[in-house]
Length: 231
Image (cartoon, rainbow, N blue to C red):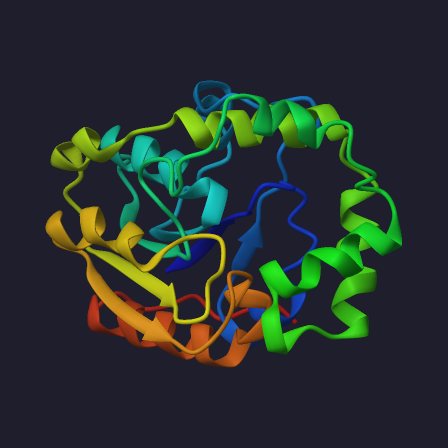
């Protein structure tokens, strides 16, 4: 089985090297076009890049609703979905102007990335990750981040769960300051297994080994042989 990783709001796929190595499978972190913001458009983009061999989707944060849409279309080779610190509907209430305000924030500033660390990494924050996050965000237009956040504030895919017929795992970060604990409830109600992992919202970056171990165990239980990582 292969793994297709759908990234968070930045959409760069550049923040997952440690996790992909820890996972030990043939794992591809998909990159989203920098000007693509709507879930419907991203769904079509992902559909064009689905593996032709059996695969599992790993959906991080922003990409949870996207993975739900993809799974509801029942791709022939999809075997399971893993949701990481994600949501099926807007995780927190926010005023409509919140997303628009993001495009005026100095996201390409290293200082801004440092200021984000308490929210996204908590006590797992470190200088190396700040540098990596800064490098990734510099490549994404602020208006793209703002438009994607607007999608988050409007989304609700809870009714779509009924069309999904593959096993689901939800990894809940115990110290997540962005997505509340309650966000896991619709997944659990839809039959997903929920597993807590000690970590912040950026769970795959802060706890790559623990997250990878949980996913490998889940994949093994499916009874499908995993494809090893390429050297």
